[in-house]
Length: 261
Length: 354
Image (cartoon, rainbow over all chains, first blue to last red; front, top):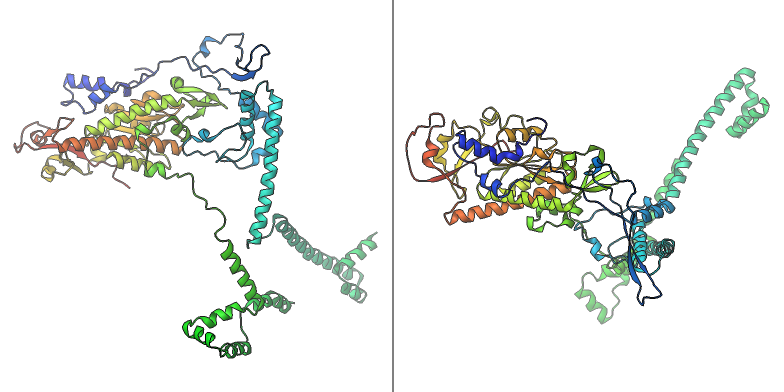
């Protein structure tokens, strides 16, 4: 039946028709189940959910005694949507998006830190209270700054974006420094109680570099000998070079450089 | 040079060897029993006294070092924290949630809301899509939850009516969840390729498979074995497909044979291919495991209900009678009439592989 195949959605009607026409002798067991729980309506387009960017702010008013909560909704676009776009899904936008973008633009290396994106229950947000930046069960990271900044913007009277950013950032830096100290102390404690962390990255790097130098030295020695022998065969006076060889390959190489000049 | 290196390498280890020189040991053994009454009694009561004495007076540097480390270990080994696993990825397979446990948070944590890139969407799915995020369609979780509950209800009801439920998930990694769901729901599973024609040409492909007649309590009735010889292969009453995109043939055959289907429909899949779509992410194994587990649990509840009713002598379905079973499938003639025993036909189709 053309492009759209509705066979799957019409199983019950088909079964009833087949039964009525005598094609099948017994109705299948599921006929009343599908009758009671009908399949979902397909191919009906509803208007998709429209998402607006809403900002919550708290403003103090000299006339009012209490600060007031103000919701700012982003203005609608002047040009209306094309009718053909009416059923298309709309971009989801939240206020944090811009804060997040700004934070990670200023701190790109925060993105290099390992992060846990796994949730077992999906209810981690219930344990979070962004009136302070540290959360139980959540590692301090860029997202903490973003959420803290958002909380400040939403809950502190007359807060501006940059002021909130500064407050959140300062708390973040302080805790990061503290973490650094904690890590150092922990390493010292571990060493004092018998831990051995092995060579550092720097030592491993130096060791690899030394190996390459040794290789180069062997190669250079060989090259010097070859050059030396070539020179000897050209000159035909081997006894002159005997004492030079005893001095070492570097000196020979230097001497040859001098003679070339 | 080699000899010197050898010395440098091994002298430390030689030093570290805890050897006691024969003279000192003899001294120790001769010195130890000083003739006081108390010392003598200690030695007689505790045979390890000498050993303890020897370890308490370490002579070599290595022994001292070892003792120091031992002390440190004894002193500090109770410090620190014990780290426990907070996430259990196997839990969803071992103990899947029930349909009543479906929450939006559960679905969100399983990643069922993530669709495909907006350019790959099937516009028929627009009613399941919540919005666009980073160029990816986000599936509406409340819709997913509603459709999943509806599908679970269907599985439960079909299981309660003794229907044959087939779970199919042929993607890599879906094997265990499919097997588990089929085990819970008392159904059958496919985790390898669907052999095309298993429904439309079942006599050829599944003709050799074993079938059996069971009664309402799922006990086998072997006396009807001979009557099943030339019957057509058995068709499922419900097919649950975790990846409809790859199993188009299966769904097409289900359509031809008029079998209702349940399928996970991602934003790029065609929702009209299945009777009961579940709009969700079919690429996340955690998501498909969750959905398969929930449907398996629903089937389990249905089977339990069916067996309970059967024990009371009731059924939700009209059982096939022995007379009907003994009718010749081609002529419709009665071969013999026997017993008012009620039997339900069930099969073991191709899905008995593990």
